[in-house]
Structures are given as C-alpha cells and as structure tokens.
Length: 211
Image 1 (cartoon, rainbow, N blue to C red):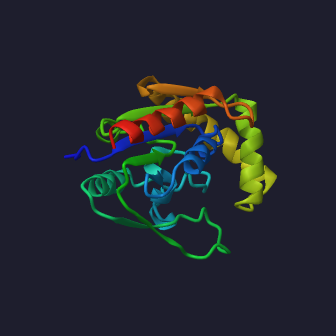
Image 2: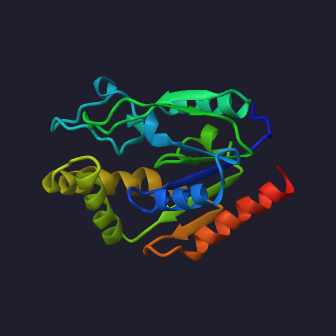
C-alpha cells in the first residue's frame, strides 16, 4: 500500500521521444533532496534471461525484456520510506564501469521509461502521468546519434533494430498507454517546450504548498 508521503510522477513515451530532455529540465530545477529520479532502463533482465528471437536477436523493446514485477515491488519499497539500491544497466557496453545507484524517498519521485504505464498495478500508483512524444523521423535521428555515440552500435544495427523492434513495439505496447496520461508533451525541438515548463511549474507548486 502506497503511503502518500511523496508525489509520484511517471514519464512514458517512445524511444528518443524526449523523456531524458524532460528529466534534465526537472533535475536542473530541483535539488536531490527535493526530487528522486528513477529510470526503468535499470530493470532490464540480464542477457541470459532474455528471450531469443527466431533470427537470433533479443527484442529489448518488448515489455517482457524488463523485470516489471521487481520494479513494482521496489517502487512500493521506496514509497514506504525505505532506501533502494539497484545496479545500473549498461546496455551491453563492456567499457562502462559497474555502478550501483542508491535512491532515497524525496517529496517528489519521478519515474521514466517506455513501459511505465504498461501494467495496471504500476500505473495506478502515479499521481501524475506524463507522456512524451515526437515525430518518427525526429526520434530516429536522435536514436542514431545516441546509440552510436553512447552505446557504440553500428548504423546498420541501429536501423535494423529500429525497423524490426522499436517501431512495431512502440505501436503495440507504448503508444496505447498515452490514453492514461494527464499531460502529453510534443517534443520535436531542442528548445524548452511549453509542456516542460508546465510540468516544472506544477512540481514547484506542489513543493511550495503540499510537501
């Protein structure tokens, strides 16, 4: 049972839609004592627990690729006032050093990820649900830049994964969860969109009046 100690905010949306952009805006507007930010990316199952597709690949854009049950129980654990320690997921980058992340309950807890609103029991915990979307060509450009620079993927690999996994899984599993959102942000530019300002101002109002 969730104790109403914190405002729990969920941010969902497709890959490279601008979720991180919104998170950075929130992180710059508050200190770590005010806001705790959690990424669902750190709940990807280990590679040896992933389902291998007929073509030999792993579909990391399917909700079954993540341990959503563990995420649900960890979130309840945190909301009940306990600290949470999880291992950072490296996206198959062997050069990145192992890192453990410790989360503490703050007046505002923000959770972001593709499937934040996918499961009903997780979805109903949120006090505010935000969905970030962008045009398909914008997301593809961002995805190429991110996966090549940060994760070392080849262009062919990025395009193949985008066509066969990212787009169909978004349409089947992620986009339908937009119906549950309280706020939808269209993020097609690098400028701070009005929707981001609305979110930040809402969180500031909460801190000033209810936290």
